[in-house]
Amino acid sequence: MIEASAVGVPAVYVPLPIGNGEQSLNARAVVDAGGALLVADADMNAAWVSSHVPPLVTDRARLEAMSKAASDLVPRDADERLARIVMETAQGGSR
Image 1 (cartoon, one colour):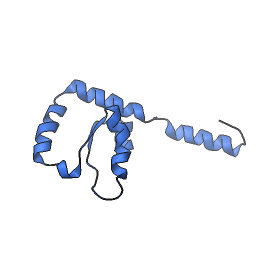
Image 2: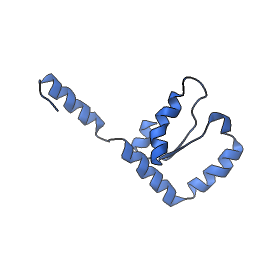
Image 3: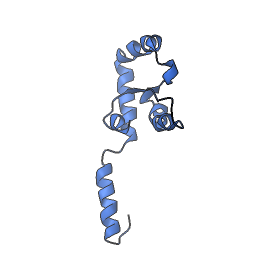
Image 4: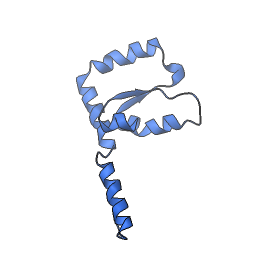
């Protein structure tokens, strides 16, 4: 999920109906930001796809907005930030 958001891919998330709801929780930030749709597994069927997917994939403005919303959530330099924190900590410095 983070990977799709980081590169700005609009998504439809269908959390598995098992566990403690962590998949829905993990998707919530992207969905709330407008970068993805969330549909319950029980609701994912041909009728849902027919009524939601064609209008989405043919709406260029909406896809662009979803892409921007998704990519804005994930810092693309997270690896560099983490490396900097590790190096500063190892050197006894502060962030």
